[in-house]
Length: 351
Ligand SMILES: [Zn+2]
Image (tube, rainbow, N blue to C red; front, side, top):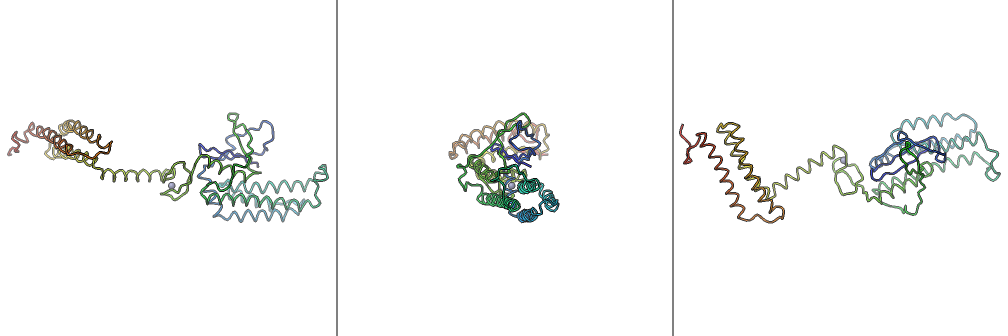
């Protein structure tokens, strides 16, 4: 299996394509269905997974098994392929592990095929004295490359994906590939250049000014281009909303402007509540509320001019609000008088 990847910084995604046909074939076309999309945030989890899980050890054991068994030459080596398949199933949701396993297995397969079908047409200088030793060496160097790449990724992750090595000096050899006959994408081969992948990934993070933050709610790390305390997970965004509302409420309670507005609204609300208490019908209460609305709006507008410029509220505002309260109270009284619940001089009528 050959792997190719595309890094999309805008979408914060890495698409890993897999194919049985190597790159250099003509009319090389990949389809979207051959891609495994991983978000940058998922990369963090995959790398963390590598540091916690036992598969570091398992990959090493598989590589040892390969070097030991390749010497059996033409014997069918079921043990190795069975162990490989077993690990592929075990780590099928972890693309990083799968790539490591596939790189190792394809090195093993290539070398085994060479041992089974030696190419005697090769120039004499390419023929080695001990082909088994050569195969063992290639497998163990493939394993060492994988291990170094993974250790490098873990180090990058521990450093929150900051540029810890100079990736600008590296040349990234991408190839333009047709995806579904619709889109030309620049893909990079992953099989031979796992280290290059690490550099390119970091390089892209650097250029796009993405930083790693730790979510205040779920404690997971995530990429973002602006300082933010919550990751994009739905439940964390919900927690963020709640926190914002709490803050807004606290700010509101402390703001002298909102306090004044709230106090006036509360006064109007209390009066309509009193009307209900006096068994005034709902329609009339509605009329009262409607008549209050313009006053409430006026008070809000009046205070807003101070709020917007953050000027302290002057004494005149207090006088102004008192005056507005009197107007509203007058509407209230008029309703009571109209309904015969209050005489014009202001004393309630005796029952
Ligand atoms: Zn979170």
